[in-house]
Amino acid sequence: MKTIRLVVTICVLFTACFALHAKAKTERLDIESVSSAWNVIPDSLFLYQQPLEQQWWLRFNDATLNTLVDEVLKNNYDLKQAAYRVDQAKAAMRVAQGGFYPTININAGYDYNQNVTVPGATSHVGSLGVDAQWEIDIIGAVRNRAKSQKASYLATQEEYNAVMTALVAQTVQTYVQLRCSQWRLQVVEHNLQSQKETMEITEARFNTGLASALDVAQAKSIYYATESQVPSMETTISEYINQMGILLGKVPWSVKEQLALPQDATELNPNMLVSVGIPAQVLRQRPDVRAAEKSIDAKAAMVGARVADWLPRFYVTGKFGYASQDFQDLFNGNNMYWQVAPSMQWNIFSGTTLTGNIQSAKAALEEAVNSYNNTVLTALQEVDNAMTHYHHATTQVEAVQKAFEQAQITNKLAIDLYKKGLTDFQNVLDAQRSLLQYEDDLVEAKSSVSLALVQLYRALGGEWNNEQ
Image: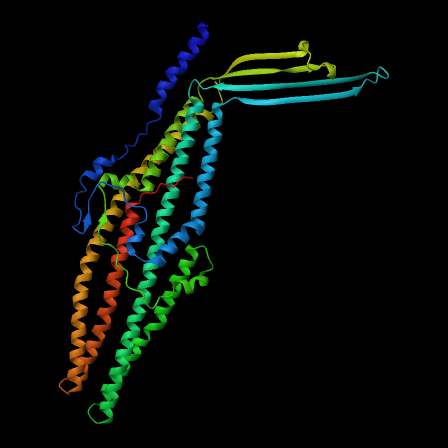
C-alpha cells in the first residue's frame, strides 16, 4: 500500500510540473492591449457592441445575389471539403475520448476433435468469456490527448467558418465586379450612340460645306476608338461569369443566362451604415483568430500528453467466462472463471523517442503561438485597411458624381455651340472624351464602394454559428 501511495505521489508531482511544460516560450499577444490603441474609426462607420450580422450581403438588396450566395453555400466544393475536414476532426476527437472507457472483448470458441490414440474417443471443448481492460487515467495522458483532439476539432470548425466567410465574400465580390463590367459596357454603348449622332451631324455639316473633312475624320476616330473597347469588356464579363460558375459548383457557361444583366437592373446601393463593433470584439469574431486560439490549446494539451508518456500507466484487467472440456456442461457453475488484475506499465527507457516527442510537441506549440500572433496582426492590418478603403471610397463617389454632372453640361454646350458654328469641333471631341471617362469613372467609383464594403465585412469576419 505504501508503494502505491509513493507511485501516485510521484505521478501527481510530475503532473503539477506539466503545467510548466505546457507553456510556450513565445508570449502570446493580448488582444485587449493590441487593440486598445486602435481607436480611430472613420465617421462613415458605426461603432457599437453587438455582433456583426450573419447575412450582411442582404444590404445590397439584390435578389439575384441572395440566390447566388444560397447556391454557393450549398454546392461549392471547397466548402464541402472543409465540412468533411470537420467530420474527420470530430471522428478523431471521438477516438481520443474512447480512452476514457474500458475495452471489452467477447471471446468464444468450440473445438470438436477425435483422439487418434483412442479409437472412437471424441471431445467437445468450449469456452465463452468476456475480457475487459481499463486504463485508470491518474496522470492525465488520456485526458490531455482527448483535450488536444477536442481543441483541434473546434479549430477545424472555425477553419470551416473562415472558408465560408471568404467564400461568401468572394461570391459577392465576383458578382459586384461582373455587374460593374456590365454597367461599364452599357456606358460605352450609350456613349457610342451619342458619338454616332455627333458623327452624323458632322457629316451633314460637311456635305453642306459647314464643316471640314478633318472634323468628320476626328468624329469617326473617337467613335471607333470607343467601339474598340467593347470586345475587351465582353471578355471580362465572360471571365467573371465563368468564375461565378466555379463558385456555384457548376459548368461555367451554364450560368450565363442566370447572370445576364436584367433590363430593369439598378446599380448596387448597399446600406452605407456598417456595424464595426469594439476593436477587441472585432478580432475575436474573426474565425481565423478563433481557430488560431484553439490550435494553441490543442498543441498545449499535446505537450501535456507527451510529458505524461514519461510516467507509469495504470490498468485494471478483468476476465469472466466459462470453459469446459465437455461442451454440454459449459455453463456449469464449476466451469466458471473470473479474474480482476490491476497492473502498472512504466516505460523507463526507449532511446530518444520520449524526449523527441516532447521536443516536437513543444516546437509545435511555439509554432502555434507565433501563428496566432501573426494572425492577430494580420487581422488588425486587414480591418484597418478595409475601413480606410471603405471610408475614402464613399467620399470619392461624391467628387466623381459632380465631375460627371459637369461633363454632361459641357458636352451638351459644346454640341449646341458647334451646331451654331460658334466653336470648333475640337471642343466637342474633348467634351465627349471627358463625358465617357467620367461616366465610366462614376460606375467604377460606385462599384469600389461595394467592393470596399465586401472587403470590410470579410475583414470583420462575420458571426457564424454553424453546427457540424
